Length: 290
Image (cartoon, rainbow, N blue to C red):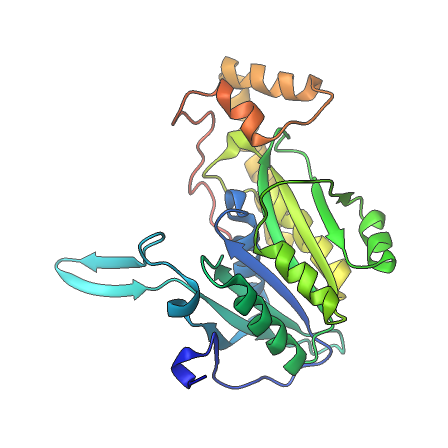
């Protein structure tokens, strides 16, 4: 395979200490931008350095998810193709280093993509892979609910220790499951975490679940992560939401119904109660993660 045909194009392999891979994808499993947003947060917070990228021509359909362009005053400012990038974060306290993948979920050639991804992991001596997903659910903005799967009993006990709910599911899947399956075949530990997001907070940065997810990753990956900014954002956001609840009878009803529900439904089962296109809360850009 020629250089141009390589699925992952590497500038230079970093030298890392017992690294773990954390992968967040945009697309089907990225409700409230939690999975992709968490990767972006880790990259920014840990000052991770870029070292490789996904070849978009191999794994993506441009007619299905078009590149983003920024044009001002008749001038082309930027063009952002589909794909994704790999970043390395080094820990200077003898703890584990990180490889962070921030990417669009591939449209094509999943088997090749996962093979390329895990081969890169083997070349970097990665023994643990963690994928991040998020879904809409009938939960409250104050809930911190994460479900997951693990590749062995020891990892399962670690998940249980942090109240991560074991997943029971049958149906369509995302790239996460194939990564999880193939990682096990190669003898790697693997975890898939799924954050449950309130359907009524669309277009909102959910600082609370990001704060909780950051703490989980720090524990599972054995690395330090200062999330005080997320914690402060969560407190401020909750105050703002409570003000909206106090002023909005319809929202009050929805919140009370969720509190009283004994069985948590999926986004598909609750969205029928909301008119198409209507948003109960829209706090878009209320905060920006820093």
